[in-house]
Length: 414
Ligand SMILES: C[S@@+](CC[C@H](N)C(=O)[O-])C[C@H]1O[C@@H](n2cnc3c(N)ncnc32)[C@H](O)[C@@H]1O
Image 1 (tube, rainbow, N blue to C red):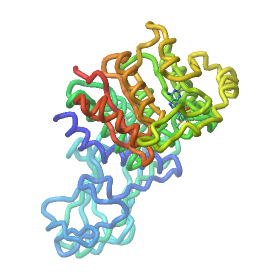
Image 2 (tube, rainbow, N blue to C red):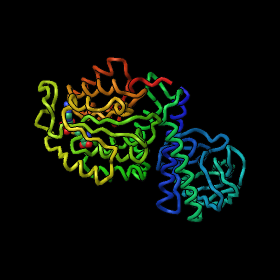
Image 3 (cartoon, protein in one colour):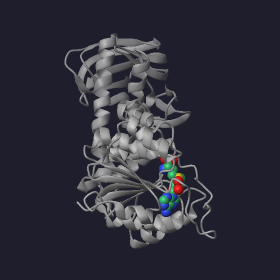
């Protein structure tokens, strides 16, 4: 599939861009590890050129034929002066080509000795900067630990950071929205990988933590959620970037943390979107002692009064709190409001989950997200059984399995 191939080839450059950006914010100097080159060497490993061969992490990567791409392409450089330093040692000489757009020459020079550096003046913005090395007959050995690009001015660094951030945001938005070429068996496989891998390997985490919407929503939830930060991050990505619309329903709100979080996000990002928070607020109902780990003694301190007060303080008039059993409160939602693009099922037990899934399916907008906070955790086999019966066995495939289970219902068809 084209879109998936594009995503696979994009995953590493995107991660790289982020590190690049982070480095830039922390210090005026940007350290560019060898990962940022075309060959995608693992990070923090040095490149060795010796006897006409190049080695990486002690292993031979073959003879040097033609040139070695040290850095780039796809690195943007705004106008300004730069110094490009090679941290390491070169015995003999490497001919260096600084170019753009896969070969258009900007500067050609030679480097040798300890930590050599060259300067470059960029007149017009460059989209795809690259640094290529060519072996000369004099080259005996080179050990390059890292390459540093120093923009030589704060203003330049800030512009570069801005360009990088925009590229990252545009790419993320494209990958997380439904497009025909991203769909496989009724789910957006590109979005599932992008969110799942981005959270599992951490590539998306620094961006999310800096996002003003994330920061505001976390503040509004007042630390009241027992949902893991990564699961909240995934809800954030769905609410912020999905291109389908409707209301949100949560089955199991307890102290209201995830409900406040979603309501604060919806208020900022989705005009008119209501968030329904459902719970007994007095603890688990009767459970199946044989199947469920949880029993009716759990979660008895729901504190709905505090939740109502925080809702007022935060101005979350889009949050509707419904106290009682799902079976009794769901029918209170009007037909007009019962159009959900996201169901957050966080009720841990079999019977409750079956009802939640049924209701969600009945009132789903096309391609809605049904998210299970705990289906894959050790003490929720009852919940997982409901997922298997009412989704998996109905031929519905998961869009995401990490950090929590995400399904699309009715299956996406574009
Ligand atoms: C894990 S807690 C929810 C955590 C919450 N989402 C948060 O942000 O911390 C599970 C909740 O599901 C509720 N629950 C389970 N089955 C229910 C049902 N049938 N009707 C109402 N509430 C239910 C329990 O009362 C409990 O508070």
